[in-house]
Image 1: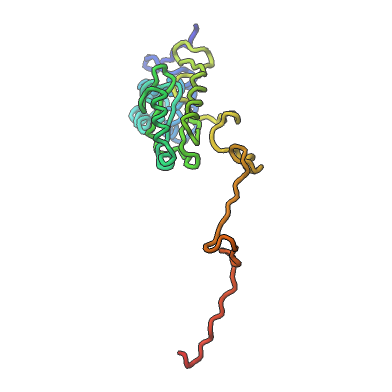
Image 2: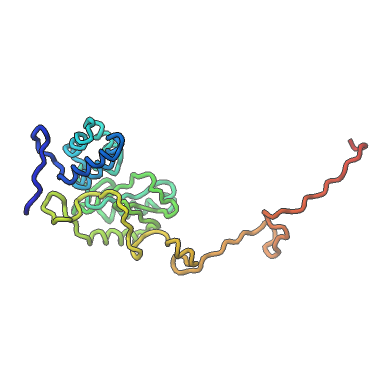
Length: 259
């Protein structure tokens, strides 16, 4: 199988990244007024190709951006979404912050650990999954408990729903970059954020706005009506509901002798 010829630096050392990735990094550098602003997307480009951030890959990013290697490495170790060693094909992150914790995040974390057979921060033996539960918030408090898989959010989790997500991902084939994978195959490792939207039939989370606008709630039940009851009798409605403007009371007029 033919492969792209290696790219060499000005010093004659072989470079670890593909030519297309190097061109992408160069384009990202030219997009920003200061090269340092391009570090994050450049690291995504490296991780998308290799599956993790190698020392050689980060050194090449620093060279293209004309920065010190320590600047690039400092950014890579600050964010948890970057990997310093090879990771699984899919990255699973379970939220354990307060909203999710109150809605059963601990049960979900325990179920994921038992199902994948590795503790948080580990990678499965088949190289399919790397998962962690150290993230503090995914911004999905309204659908707690929640997790992200390859940057796609899954909300209102149950053990059964988690099983379904894992089985769908296991059934997908994934080629590993740099090991003779077919052309066009998705590289190994967590993938950078995309604008892809899951199909409606498999999308997780609350129903879409058009369904709610049509008066439909999850499960086909009619929308519930919220009633506000006033203190006092439940049978006799108040003649002056809270919030309505009432007629002001007349105050007695004071005579000069009362002062």
